[in-house]
Length: 136
Image (cartoon, rainbow, N blue to C red; front, side):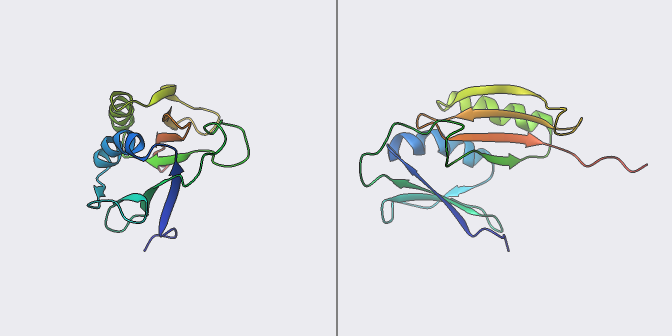
């Protein structure tokens, strides 16, 4: 059982967000629940945290900006560098903007390989691969 049952993200344009998140989440093996319930669209995968996009109920401030109080980013751990590259390309094709192209991040670990993308609302996600250190 996952520690987090579900993650809800409010977006300004639910249809556009679904078009951007949908291909990425499908590539991660998540399935979209049919229809829209209570102003939201959800994706799930057995044994994983459900992700729900909610339609904003009121106009708010401009899209989120990285570094402000609030959402930082959501990192998806994947099995290989090739998978990071593949998901990055899928996200770009779905309309995400590259923040950082796939590369090694030695400040985290010499094995940490990741990319970062943002959607139209400024919501940032990361695809990362950080294999365990090989046994000595």
